[in-house]
Image (tube, rainbow, N blue to C red; front, side, top):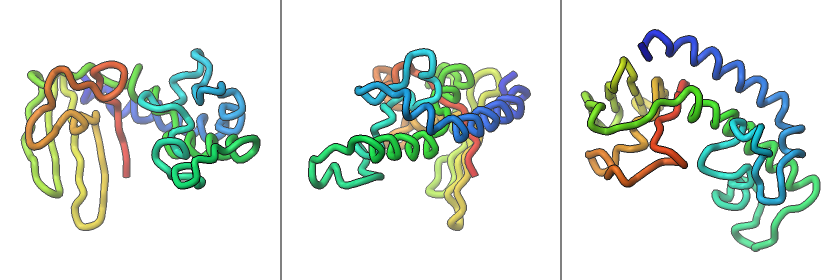
Length: 170
């Protein structure tokens, strides 16, 4: 079933990605002081971080991690726009387009340095390649639960729920 739905979900995800790019200036302006979008817009942000993660957690933007001085005003707004464009509509890929993850229902077929392939229930799949300097990811991000050549313990959850988000990354 998921194998059949995948192309439609990818098209919907790409459309919502374009909408996110267009709305990112407005979305960034609507974020609260905690760096989260209003609940009714939450699917436009990453499911595992606020839209301030780019400067506050990962250091992708600005000098906060080095200086401890938090951005304000237009700089803060711009960093939020950048983060939304870097991770567009990721909540959509996690919640409505993602799949519940149960490791007992997934089987890893290829676990190499350059390739990782797994099949899950109802035709869900995960293909990741890092071969020859070319990276692509298709299916659902089951590899996020793969740690040290085995499935992470059932207590581990990537995000607020044990789900694998949809992915289509070239």
